[in-house]
Amino acid sequence: MKNKSFEIAKKQSKLWEYDLSQNPNKYRVLTGDRPTGNLHLGHYFGSIVNRLKLQSLGIETYILIADYQVLTDRDIFNDNSNYVYELALDYLACGLDPGNYKTHIFPHSHIPELNQLTIPFLTLVSSSELNKNPTVKEEITASGMNTINAGMYIYPVHQAADILFCKSNVVPVGKDQLPHIELTRKIAKRFNKKFNSNIFPEPVALFTNSPLILGLDGVQKMSKSRNNSIRIKATADETVKLIKSAKTDSNRRISYDPVNRPEVSNLLKLASLCSDKNPIDIADEVGDQGSGKLKQITAEAINTYFEPIRDKRKELEKNKDYVRDILHKGISKARKTAIETLSEVTEVMNMKI
Image (cartoon, rainbow, N blue to C red; front, side):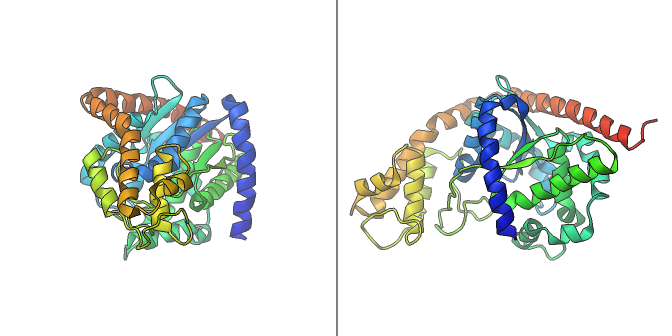
């Protein structure tokens, strides 16, 4: 049943993707990340490039830094504000541009009206629905926590508030996040029906053709928590060192075979993404020169591709006020939107005084 639901959503996503390019003004996008450290290459090719595409189409995009959500499974609050700042630096260096596009970057802890929506939304969801959410189960397992706090348990509802406060009707997600979108759609539908309103759209999932980037272990998805990633901000020397440590295999002849040679193929994929060359052609170029040559080519491709991004980031680091101004403007815009939405919500719930 779950796979059937995904296949249906994937087909619908293709239709939305086409219409986004034809009628960008019809749409509003909500996307974001948790501030648990700097972005890495998996983030860049998995989501940032798609955000840049949406931005270039002129689609209004709210990029949320989910700092409250970090509290559910991480004990890093001492560094929270710095992580928010670092994440904003990564966004801006990669080309997200609130100054010239309809792009708004903000941490949701600074939008109290957004968070107020969580309370009525919680009344629209049963505990059994939260218990069945597969993504929450996976997050709990991954966290290794012995005691599950209520914040972790209800964060899909908080995420629904993140999505609906700005009346987003499109949310770029991976397959694992589809249950959250389905729950958000239910909440929007139930709210509108219960309070006889049409305040909230029922957002759709936008599945991108993002490549799965494995980590340096060649087994798991690239992840900060698994310590198998290459940060976007890494220096050229750090990148070379990390790529040298990447796992490969004993076959000296290099070939692109994601099923049987995932580690080698992942390096070829990275080199391909950073050079616009076909991974098979890169494999033929390396031939029987072995993994050492492959790692050299991959590191050079990554460093060449990310050099201008890293240079831009260094310049932005010198102007903290500019970065903070971007965040403050994003907060101001998000709060204005949230205040308007909450006013509509309290009106239909007959809570106006």
